[in-house]
Image (cartoon, rainbow over all chains, first blue to last red; front, top):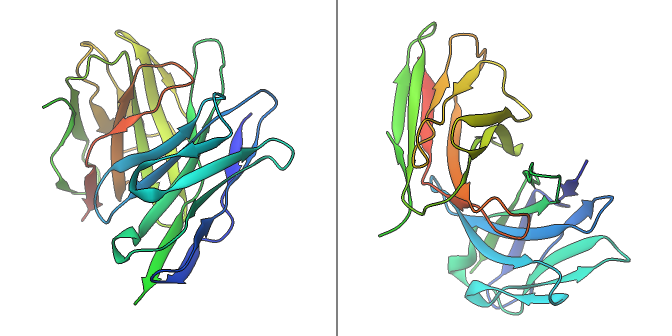
Length: 115
Length: 113
C-alpha cells in the first residue's frame, strides 16, 4: 500500500527566507505525487504534480518540488517566502491499482511566515 | 464556471440524527471522492466512486453511506452510527487516472450539538 510521510507538522520561516517542506513516500510501484495547499476553512488547491515526465516540477506561486527516487522524497521548496504563503500544505501519492486509483494524503504541514 | 459545489458550508446536527452532505460537479469527471479532515490527521478517505452506480469503501467508511445515481452528484450521508461525526468534510472529483489530480470543493463543516 502506498503512503506519504510529512516531516514537521509546523514550520516557521521568515519572510524572504527559503521554504522547505518535506515529504517522503512509500510505494512498491512508481508513484504519482502531488502537493496541495489549503487556506483556512477552504478546500485544497493543487500546487504541482509529478507524473514521471521530469524530476523537477514547477508549480504555481513560485513553488517547485524535486522527485528523488533514491531518497523516496518529493520535498516542496520556494526560494523566498511571502506572507501569503501561510497555509497548510499536503503531500499526496497515487499509484495505479487496476481501476482503484486512490489518492492518499499525508498529515499536513502548517507553514507560518514571520514578518 | 466549472467546479465542485458542496452544500451547506456549515451544518449542525443533533446526536442520533442522520444528515446528508451535498456534492455536485460540472467538470464531467468520472471519479468522485469524500474525505474527512480532522486537525493533525490530514485527509482520510471515506468513500469513492469511479463510475455511476458504483462506489467503494475508503479507509474510514463505518457510519457513512453514499450513492452515485448521477455522474454529477455524490451525496454523503452521515448516519447515527458514526460515533464522532464532528469534522470538516471535503468532496473531490477527478478523471480517475493515476496521473491526474483531484479537484476539491470548499468543504462542509459538520458539528454535532
